[in-house]
Image (cartoon, rainbow, N blue to C red):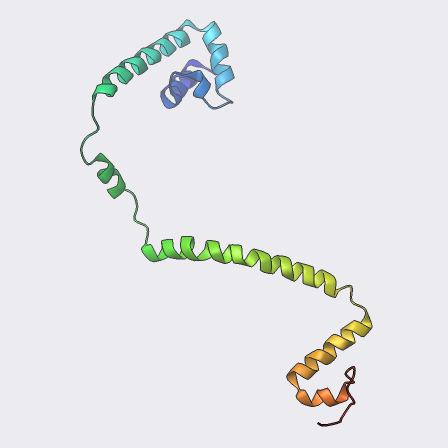
Length: 147
């Protein structure tokens, strides 16, 4: 790190090297060990920070500052906010059990033997075509006998 990079990082991240990003702090400490100009820049930044902390502690925030800052933020369409925050999160959470159930069902369905698969097909036929009921032999019933 050279003196120009150190000064730029000092302006960006402040005088406390512990708050600097991890890749910048070690080279800055090495530069401070060898450069008197870097130490002078750090001392100036520390003095400036101390003076600003003393002065700004006594200065109240301007009235309406929060309102002005919020007014300058880009507006979010209410329908877009509703659609993204209100609709998709619960829908995504509701889909989790559905996906898990589908996966478990597909796993179990793949293990069924042919006789069970045939029985399942017969049950589906009965559900959608009541005439198929006469073809099936139900336990305890006689096929084709009407009450």
